[in-house]
Image (cartoon, rainbow, N blue to C red):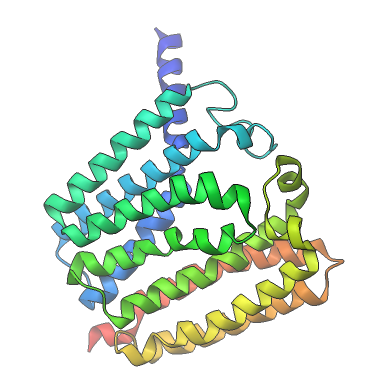
Length: 296
C-alpha cells in the first residue's frame, strides 16, 4: 500500500514537472500584474481567479507539449536528461495527452469565464511556443531566444485583455518590457552553459556567434529595456512610485550587462547578471503594483 502511494506521488510529481511549474508561476504573476494595471487596482475576484487559472493551464499545456517535442534534445543535455520523458519515467504519449488536455481546458475556461480575446491569446502562445519555437526556432536559428520571447511576453497582455477586452498602448508597453527582458536573461544563462548547448546541437547565440557577440547583444537589449520600461509612465497607468524604481532598476541592469561585457574572463559576471535579471523583473512588477497612484 505504501509502495503504491509512493508510486502515485512520483507519477504526480512527474506530470507536474512536465508542465514546467516555475515558468507557469511567472506567467501567472505577470498576468496578474497586467490585470492590476488595467483595473488600476484589484479587479473583481471571480475574474482574477478564472483568468489566472486559464493562464496556468495554458502555461502547463505549453510546457507539456515542449517536453514532448524536445525529448530528443533533452537526452543530450545534463541539465534536462533527468526530466520525465528522457529518463523514461513517463511515455511521450502521456505528455502529448496532457498538453492537448490542458490546452483545451485553458481555452474553455478563458472563453467561458473571461473573454474570447484572452482565450485566443493563450491559444496563440501555446501554438507559438510548442510547434514554432520548439520544433523550428530552437533548432534552426540563434534568433530563437529573441523570437521565442513573444510567448513569454503574452501573459501580461492576457492580463490586460482579461480586464479591458482590448489592447491599449500600456498593454503594448508591458509586452515590450517582457519581450526585451528575456534575451539578456536567457543569454546570461547560455554563457554559463554554452558547452551543453553546443553538445546538444542547439544554436544558441554564444554557440553560433561566440561569447563576445552575445555580451554585446546583452548590453544592447538592456539599453533598450530602460527607456521602454520608463515609457509606461506617459501611458497614465503608473506614477512616480513606479518611474523612480524603474530608472534605478534599469540602470542597475545596464550596469550589470556592461560589467558582463567588459569582464569576459569572470564567469561570475554572467551568473550575477542572470540573478539580477530575476530581481529586476520582480522589483519592476512590485513597483507597478505598489505605485501610490493606486490610492489616489
